[in-house]
Structure formats: structure tokens, C-alpha cells
Length: 378
DNA sequence: AACGCGGGGGG
DNA sequence: CCCCCAGCGTT
Image 1 (cartoon, rainbow, N blue to C red):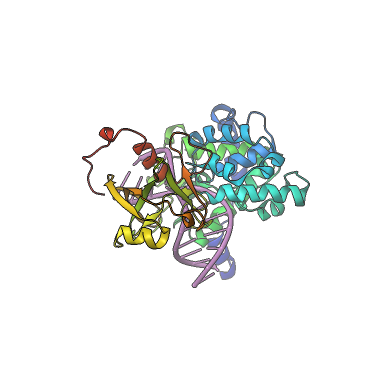
Image 2: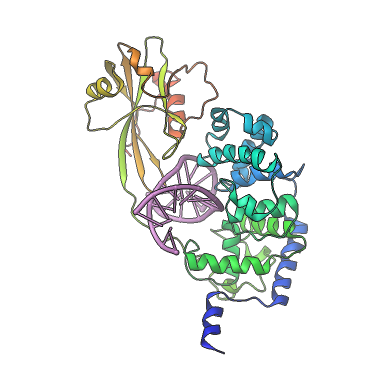
């Protein structure tokens, strides 16, 4: 074998046709007996519903998504309705799901489908991928699941199944590893029954070839799984190389006016909790009164502090100390400096709130005596 | 407390 | 290109 060929083959191994056939047959047979066929977005199967579900499923597991999906479809039953909807209302439906850029992208994409595709979701990979929020794998999922056409996918479940079955070393986030996995997915995905196969691979990864303790006894690929043969399924896929997360601290101000309403401000569209409504934040090292005078232009009186809590992101920990503050003179300029509202706890509206803010507001919407005073510092 | 998830965007 | 970013549920 020539060196060039050897290198190429090492980088991107080719699966013999019969082996690919055997693989997909086993997966499809398993799907007939164990695959999920009555999820809410599979019931009346239309492209819009598949699209919404795939965006929701991007970083979120099936069980969490179901409730959000049903409420979302109820409020926005089709693409024109979603396009016309108030962005704040869309965010409200996403509140709690996380990764809020998905909701903004979805709303934008709906508009693009209206203007560029006459309101009809396209079925080719390039057009799908051109829509915000749809990458290669989601485009493949929509094309196969919604339109029944050939397209490989590579979500976290498929990555895990393939990395184990073909003992692919390295972290799947690494570009070279990802290329190998895509190549495998392309070759193994059958041109007939692609939807069933893709659904089966995701179900297999979610229910059988799970991260923690895989149920190899009930896996349709026991006989051919190379990681199992080598006796170390848990080594694949290799974990992400880890780094130490920095810790940041902030104070969230619960500013109440004489009527007892609470001041909320909308976060900038990008960054943490982008577009969601949150509490004003005063850096811990700043004197609170000075900060409120300078930034909010109002005089305040500090009343009480709530138990500090840690909110963790993938790249840092945020230690939040909520502070109850009374506004003495609700100044005129206060509401003009940015998108702000006085929020009535007694009459919550359709507004996307940052998750820790929801929890804090829920906590103060009860008598002080119920507050947990013990609690360790984070 | 650590981990993993798909896509976008910036260096 | 590669690396960083985002928020939740699960382990």
C-alpha cells in the first residue's frame, strides 16, 4: 500500500459496504422494537414541528423538551405565527430551557423562511444550514426526519455510539476526530429508511449506549462493538480536556419602590442571559449607595441580604448575593437609561427571566420567615 | 461539583 | 482553523 493511501486511510477509515449494511440493518431492526415513535413532534409529523423540536433538543434532553415543545406549538402553531410574534413572548416560552440565542435565532430564521422561501421550510442541506441556529447536524436531522431524505447526522448520541463501536480515540470536539465521526456517519447512514435509522441512532445513544453505565446486554451492536470487545466501553469517547473555572461574584439588587414593585432591566442581546430580564447588578467592592446614585440615579436604603447562591456556567462560577433595597426617590431618569420595568410580583407577565432571578423572586414572594437562613456560603 | 450538549462568532 | 461562549439536567 502506498504511503499516501495509508495516511489517508488512517485519517478517514472506509467502512466496507457489507459492514455498513449489517450495521444499519441491526440498528433498524432495533428501532422497530425499541425506538421512540410517539414523541409529540412525531405524532402529526410536519417539518415545522420537527424543526422546533430539533432546536429545542440541541442542548436539552427529550424529557425536558416535551413540555416546552407543547406550550410553544400551542402559542406558535406555524411559521407565520412565529414570525409575527413578539420576541419577548418567544423568549418567555424559552425561559428555563437555556441557551437563549436558540430562541432569538429561531425567531429570525422564521422570518427568513417567510421572505426567502415563501414560508415553506426548505429540504436541502445548504438552504437549511443557511438559517440561523441550524448547523450541519440539525440540517441533517430536519432533512431526514421531516422530509424522509438522505442526510447523515452527528449529535452527541451518535458521536458516542460511533466512537465506541469503532474505538475512535480522542475528544470528539477535536476537529480531526469530528471529521472521522462525520465520515463514519456518512458511510453508515442508509439511503433508504434514513429517518428511522437516524431516529434509532439517537434513541440508542439516549437509552442504551448511555454515558455512565451503558446497557450493552440489550444493544443491537454487541457483537460488533469494538470498545466492548476491548473491554473498556467507558474510555470512549474521550472526555474534553478540562480547565479550572474562575469564580466571579456579584450582588443582585432587589430594588423596591413604595408600591412594592421590583426593578428589572433587560440584558443586552448577546452574552450571559442575552435578551432576558434580570436584576441590576452592583459589583461587590462598590459601595451600594454610591453605585445606585451614580448608575441608577436614585437614593436607596439597604434593607437585608438573602442567602448567597452559586450559579455555574460552563466557563465560570458566579456567586450571587441578592440584596433587598428600598428606593427612596424613584427618580425620573431611572426608567430612561435602558429597557427597564417595575415588575409586579403579584401579577407576573410574559417576560423571559434569567433562571437565578426567577428563583430569587420566587423566594421573596413568600413571608420572610420561610427564608432559609442556615445555608453555607458557596 | 463536574460533565456534556450543537451552533455561532471571534481571534 | 481553533477556541471560546452559553445554562440547564444528570451523575
